[in-house]
Image (spheres, helix red, strand yellow):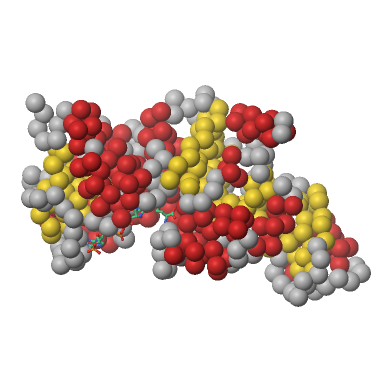
Length: 447
Ligand code: NAP
Ligand code: HSE
């Protein structure tokens, strides 16, 4: 019979307590799959005086580093979040050759290069399925199931809180502050929602996805990131008139050997699957040269859904035992992955949605068209909406153009004296014509 698999857990909050619940609830299934018992020996928290629901015999500690020092503990599960204490614990564990399971996307996005190298040097596992899109098994999918593909594109809704806010604005007609307050009441958004609504949480996850898809480190600090803070309901309504939904998209694609990546609000045509992802759900579309297009959808957060991903990592380590290979951490054999050759966002080409608030006077449209034409930006559709207290919204969609040309055209617009406030610009995702999108479009066309 196999030896028990002994783990130490740092963090007993939303995800940590979900893990403890599921270890108990699925004990028999776990045994049948691994042939061994997973024993939770110790749990570290910040405040040991709080009442905790833990099985008998589990030690409660206030020092996470004690988990790494305990020779009986084989695997450390880091679910504290934050940077410093988590980094110290993961480093200490890996230095001792102990394997680590974590959900900490912020840490792996910003310090992953060092931590993966350390894990490789010490022959330890560093697993992180829960770090990207919670319950959706995208890490395993890219690392193993799609390993035989050359990946050309990854595009997803990677932040549930932002998607909930945008869905609430779209479906219930709420404005941004009301939808954000509702997300906070539901326990989705933090009191300080910066990471979620300013796009940084999605950017952390995108950095991990790029590493898994292309085997390179894309510096998190180099990602182009725009969130949804202050997004106006009128843009959601106008986008809908053109047949689009606004979504916070994390996107990376390979273009001539370079990676073009970023997080931004974008107009997604209503027939695309991504446009239909509602509430706090996440979704990821991957394109590979063998698989074509693959679409994964599920809960990106929450106690049990996230614990599901942590447990998956733990079970695979319990099954692998001594058969563990360091390349299994990133999916690539090189210990030192290269840095990505990045295509700047300003060189990326897409159609754009633009809203300019103007006065309703003669010559405005001519000047706006002139500003666009001066930068070779071609307008595809233009609508002038009814006057509002803050001006007349002039809304247009452009043909595909670079981010650089769009920015230059908007600067021209703003110096023309014809616009009453800075113009709002969002990218428009191409209607990709992928297998399922095309099938869905056909279904929609058929009624
Ligand atoms: P949480 O609810 O805030 O819980 C954090 C836990 O860590 C608490 O038990 C806290 O102790 C403990 N802790 C924090 N700092 C500590 C320190 N320095 N020393 C010892 N214990 C410490 O966090 P969470 O939402 O479960 O998130 C955990 C991780 O999972 C984060 O990296 C997060 O990004 C990631 N994640 C979360 C979700 C989600 O749905 N929540 C989804 C995907 C990924 P006390 O209980 O004493 O305060
Ligand atoms: N705050 C994240 C979200 C969940 O709203 O998607 C943790 O990754």
